[in-house]
Image 1 (spheres, rainbow, N blue to C red):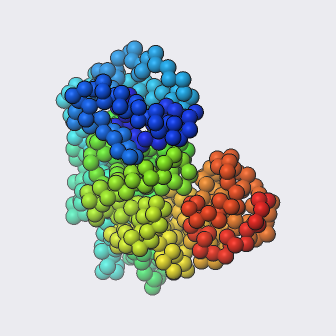
Image 2: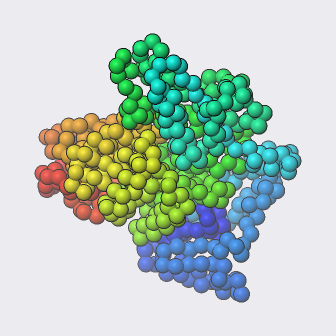
Image 3: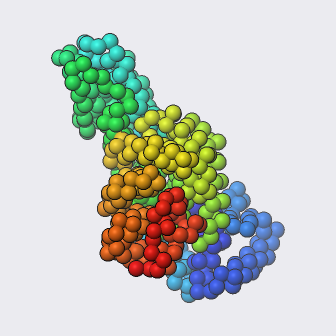
Amino acid sequence: MAMLALAPENKRSRSWIQDKLWSTRGKEQGAASLRQSLSEIRRALGPDRDCLVANAFVVSLDRSRIAIDLDNPATLGAQDVEILEGLDIGDQEFEDWLRLERQRVRKQGISATADAGMSATNLTQSRRMPNHLLLTRKSAAGHGDSPVLADCVLDTVAKSIGELGSAIVFDRRMERAEDCVSSDHCNALALHSEIDDSNGNRVERLALLQLPDKSLIWSSTLSVPRGGTLDLNDPNLLRCANLAVSIATDQFVKMHADGSERILSSALCYSGVLHLFRLGKINFEAADHLFARAFEIEPRGIHLAWRAYLRTFLLAERQFTCRQTIDAEAFDFMHRALELEPHNSYVAALSAHVQTIMRRSYVAAYELAERSVQLNHANPIGWACLGVAKSHLGKPEEGFQHTLTARAIAGSAPYRFQLDALSCIVGTMAGEFDKAIYLAEASHALAPEFAPPLRYLSALYSHAGQRELSLEMVQRLQRAEPDFSYEKLRDKTYPAAGLHRTAIIDSLPMRQI
């Protein structure tokens, strides 16, 4: 019951519970023990037995019928709080989980104590002080389309900022810069776009300013030679826009470094994204909890979409005990996300990836990815997913160009290594084996523990005759997957679908190196 009470949305899969409480028993024996425990709990609950909800894959608590003491800041702030004190299960998996939960609760307790002196009025004000992004621009004399171009650059950044939930966007383009500073905007940044083509060369400058003092946080310039045009689809321009998105999001989180960030769903979601792309079981669980908490504060589709996307990593990294459970969870989150935000390009892109990885539904993935890039042509995940879907639908050359576009425009996004890996997969399908090796090596350099590039490198190196390097990749994979072998790569249920579209899979040695 405590494990459910502390879980995101008070819900855990049956396999997860079995893994924590009966890790030393066989699968069937563990399942029987769980069924027996659930029966005992229901008997103990008597007339409230139906507040414990269970189906074939998931066990949960009815949130409308329970109260959890740790949700009370006064409980968290108590100096002697120690969850499940004195409880000894005797299973190492449970003990590991309990240690991590105690650390998390202690940190929350410290934060609750620090916030104890904040009055109810101040707390309410903190909740009502979301991040603000103010759009401003200036255009010097010259080409008549300069103001339009400056506006389009601002719109591109503002679209992503809004979709990711980083800030509320205010249009101040028709106001003077000095009029944009207001005491109401204490959590505000100004995004300034300026195009100057008065000297014959067109120059675009994009800058982020801290308000109210207008101190410069970041700026970047792009220039086009005389007679040239600044194309809105130019990768350099889109990369500049995505850099502005990343830096603005990071700056908004820093504004709340005093502890109030726990109130803001955008900061929780951003922290979850960072945990997700750090990889590993502990980071995956932390990310899932942060996304769930962000959704509790602000029920947006983007928070559910990240939870669905996270399940694709659990599958790719083989960090699951029941495939049916993570499938069911991923598609539940995905469908709810699309219902809440059907016109959010990031929701569409993350959903496309879920369709590709979880069910290999490439037509559905293509439709969602195409929607994503139509909604926001600067979305790198959308371009990458469109490339993967096109490749599986018989157009790998086009798909490869799309994934390379995703890499080119991503800027400093924390998921860059994932885009490199997807580009490797599509490059392999397109027959660009040398480029695929380069891309897999780039992904591996950024995320040494990420499994997909290691799988492809083990096959690509072998195909290229570099047997020693192939063996090295195999050995690295076996640290996380002791049962990995070339035979695994031949298994069509193994997460390496792109290899089965090439002749590489047939060229692998029949025996392990």
